[in-house]
Image 1 (cartoon, rainbow, N blue to C red):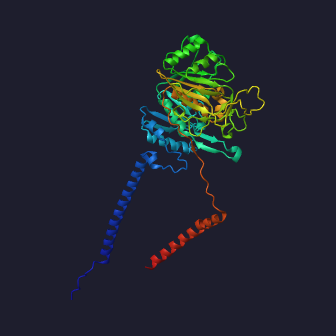
Image 2: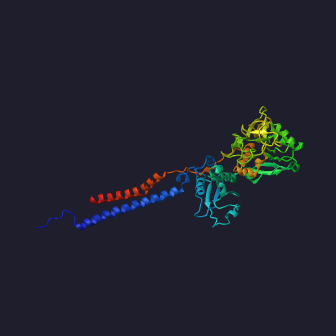
Image 3: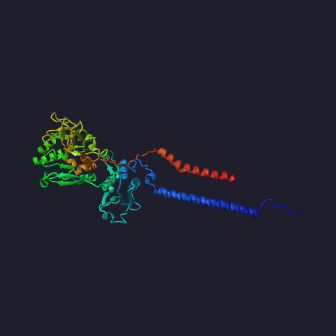
Length: 482
C-alpha cells in the first residue's frame, strides 16, 4: 500500500520559507532605516545652511536677537562685502553676541562673520588696526576701512534707581553699536564740519567728535584769522563757546555764509558777553533771556546737585529725532533764549525747562535761589533751531556751554552727544537714522509660595516618575498575558 503524499511542506521547508521571509523583511527594514537616516542627515544639512532667524527662535524676554527694521534695511541695501571678526575665546563665547551676529549674516547677503580666538591669534586685532580691542569685541572690515565695536559698548547699565532700590539693570545694546559701526564702514563720503578757533572756543571732547564721525561728519578746525574766509566745502560751522566776542568782520563773514544757505550751530556761555554775535542771532529772531535758569521740578534737575544742573525737556521734532527714547540731556548752568515767532522763520525748541522753572535775573547778588517777582517764570528754551528764508539757511543756538562737556555727557550715558549728532544731522539735511534702543535683559521673576513649591517638587520629582514606572510595568504584564 502506497503512503499518501504529504499535503504540507516538510518542517525543513517551512523553516527555509520562514528564514526567507525574515530575510526579506529584514532587508526592507534595513533599507527603510538607511533611507530614514539619509533623509534625517539631508534635513540636518539643509537646516544648518538656513539663516539663523529660520532655525533659532527668539524667545528672550526683551527680544534681544530680533533685528530692527533700521538694521534690516541697512543690511538689505549693502553692495559691499563686510566681514565681522568676533574676538571670542573658544568655549567662553558670549552667546548673546554670536546669536546676534548670526542674525546679521542671515539678513544680509554681503555680511559674514567669523571667530578669532585671541589666544590663537594674539596679533590679529593689532594687524587690522584695532589694537585696543578687548575680548568679546567685534571688528568690522570693509575694504580698507575698519571699525571696532568694543565689548563694553554692547552692554549698558542703568543706575538711575540705585539710590532708591539698591539695584540696577543691564541692557543689551549690541545691535545699536554694531549697526552704527556697520554704517560707518559702508560710508563712502563725509560731510565737512568746521569748528571755528581764534576766540577762545572750546575744543570738542572725544565723546562728541566720535559721535559726529559715526554720523558721517569730518570734524576740522579753522580760523578766519589764518584762513581769511570760510572754507568753500563747509557744510556746517560750529562756534563752540567763544570766550571773546567776534569782530564786525567775523560777523559779516558769518552773515554772508548764512545768507548763502549756510548752516550754523552756536554755543554760548552766559558769563561771556558777545554783543556782536548776539546781533547776528537777533536777525534770526533770537535773543537772550537775562539771568540763569532754575528748575523747581525735581524730575528735571540732577539729583544731589544745584537746581541749575538741568535735565531739560527735549523737543519732539525732526531736529531731535536722532536721540534714543528715554535718554536725558544734562545742561549745567544755562541761560534762556527768547524767540520772536512773528518773524518769517520756523522755530524749533530743542531743550526747555518746565513751567515750574524760572530765570533768576540777579543771580550774582542773590543769597538764595528763591523766585522773586522780578524773576520771569518758565517755560524757557535753552536751545532753539531756526529755519526758513529764501536761501534756506539753518541755525541752532545752544545757550549752555557745559552741555558739550565730556563729564556731563557721561552722567547721562551719552545723551548730550546724541543730541549734538541729531541736531548736526538736521542742520545738514541728513536723515536722522532711527536710533536703536538698548534691550532690557531683566526678566520678571516668578515667585512661587513655599507651600506650593513643596507640592510641585513632590509632583515632578516623585509622583510623575513613579507613575510612569508603574504604568510601564502594568503595560508589559498585560502584553505578556495575551
